[in-house]
Length: 452
Image (spheres, rainbow, N blue to C red):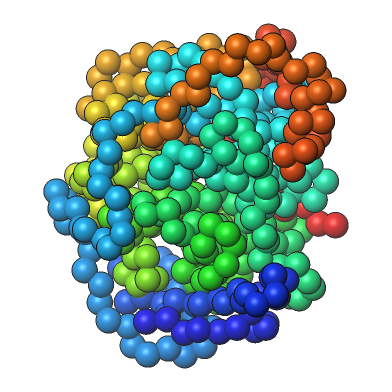
């Protein structure tokens, strides 16, 4: 059950639209309460009540929500409009450094690691990150972080690198809920009709690492219309944490996302995966705090497994985490990578046929590259050797590799003019550098929004 409100509500400022169109917002009523799982692993588990029910209810009273059935392992729902599972393993998309300033661009490569191609042209110092494929493989959604403000907004680009443009941001005028607005990690629904994304806004807590005031999960159409708020985790407890990295179930009925608590959150400075239904009900914790699961999870094409990565406490990108799977009901958590680990593991993604997994890995003090393995964790194969560009956050899609063009490459100023004609930033793509810094960057850390 949803409540329709107009764009003139104080929750989000109006966004100008072409004449004759409207941009309606809907706000999903909060779900059946926070159904924290009991003990998920021997000796590990989240205690009920660690996050109060008040944190997920909307700021206005709603009717008592009805319980929502959760997914059962081995069963994939047939959501209306959801495409059939495809077995076509196409290109992999990720992000990589493109210059000495550690600007990052979106890149694609073949399933065997060859044919790497840069498809976005970030301005100097900007970071293009967290890419996701449209179901048909034609479009990539991603977020771009501004180097001056530190705020990110959502963009799309074609698989060939054409037609890059920003999706209209939610706030284009002033207002309390537009302060420091930040939109990240877009994720296409299985039928391509919606994008899930994380949105943060509000004042910054200067005493605690500039923690943002509010952060929750939102949905909207790929053209930026029909925006609705899906979760209310930080609604009554500002500065308690950040929501990020949503991922859809293959039937389109549920989403996983990361909830990362702040220094003042409960528990402090931790992280876990959550599940929520696409209508905003049935919010529950999927992994225990002790595992420290984070980044974008990946659902197996048959809906029976959720793939995720864990990150140890301490310095960002330190070795010691791993890649795991869990059933959608929170049972049967199992490790696919060796433990204890002496390497860093980044985000992982299932292949469209479900038989393989692509993931990022870096040795201690080294740079990340992409690897693949079978769905059971065997047969690990290195795919790339990216010379310190920290190639990571892969997502495996269905797009086929473009045919090789026979004409010569444009000269730098020609390429720049072509990019401008296509509506892309004028920065030129950097050549594959061999002298990139090899120190481990803040790969898995959500960038804090800078004031001003």
